[in-house]
Amino acid sequence: MNCEKFTRNQSGNILVHCDRSDPNRTYKNQEIDHSKTYLNYNLAPEHTGMTDYEFMKKRCEEFKVLKRKDVNWLVSWVITMPTDYKGNKALFFREAYNFMANRYGKGNVVSAYVHLDETSPHMHFCFVPVIFDKKKQEYKVNAKQCINKVELKQIHPEMQEYLENKLQTKVNILNGATAEGNKTVEQLKNEEKIKEKAIVELIQNPTEEIKKSVIEQIPVEQKENIIEEEIEIIKNELKKDPKFIQMCQNRAMSENEKLEELEMQIENLKGKKNYIEESIAELELHHKKQRKQLAEEFEKEKQINNARIIEMQNTTIEQEKDKPSFWNKIADKIFNFKIVATVSFVMYQLSNKVPPERILKNVKHFRKNYDKYVENPELIQRELKIMEYMDIGLSKIEESEKIDLNKEKSRDDYDLEL
Image 1 (cartoon, rainbow, N blue to C red):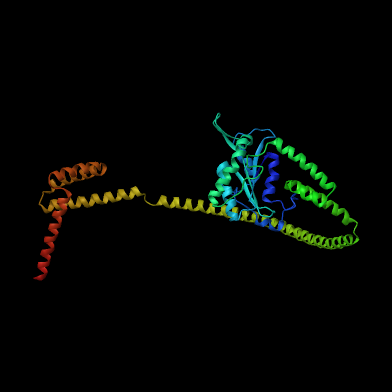
Image 2 (image 1 turned 90 degrees about the horizontal axis):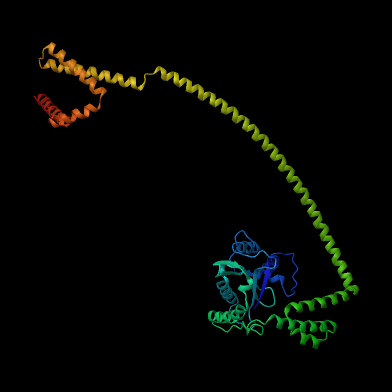
């Protein structure tokens, strides 16, 4: 496994390389089998509504990050599955992802694409290097402090121990460059100089013996350069081959015919597009006229209805004027009750043989009290309490009335029997 750091401008390329999202992109790595690219998958959570680059940018802007162009915003660990590992491939990468996500923070993970379309299955674990500044008591983005010498020395043995415990099998993460911590920059530069000389010799004199001795020492990236040089040599040789030239011409003619056919299809589609656009324009104009017409009809109906409402309101007002008011009705009822009460009172006095002059005096006093109670209803409540106290309350009177009614009914029933 190896680690690389990327600035903001560099991050876009590595993220596109990881997710293979650009179908027109040309990759330097000739070992990619595009027919297997669909097997690749991402172990990191999806960033809803955002690309990986947009998520990285948003995450960096949430914390303190220096504004310089050389500041690294992204770190990528490439974790290759050991060739001697015989266990479950998906489980290996899942546990490798869990180890890295827990180490660098799940919220900082940008992507974790597993590539199965290359010679060696591997995972690109990309994350924002967020650390906690103890002095300032705040989080910040700092790749230099996140991936320092101590981290490079510790991560390999710790990851190997973690995976062996989880997978219950031997996992050879450590290699010549990582067994005792990553090599220093000076050591790597010296090795690069030696390898570059070997590559020059290989290109100038490509014998099988030199190839074997050199290729074993060089990394994958430089192997690609050697392959590119050999391809150029083959291309130059093929350019002189008449059969190859004829084959290319035949293929070119076939491709031209396909191209012409596609151009005709494009022209047909353009014609259909123009027809659809014209139809849409006509429909919009027609709908605009209809909306205008409907709006005018609605306004007319609205005015007619408003006039009807005003007319109905005026008619109702005139009718209400002719009708007696609620209070007039109440006054009439009160007056009628007063007459009934007066007649009832006078007849009661006559039945008890009270002299007419006395009845006149009593009835005047009765009607005066009636008006007083009508004008001051609260006096009724006070008088009722006095009646209750004197044991002649309304309940007592109603009870006495019921007794009298029962007696009269019994007498009437007796008379019927006789």
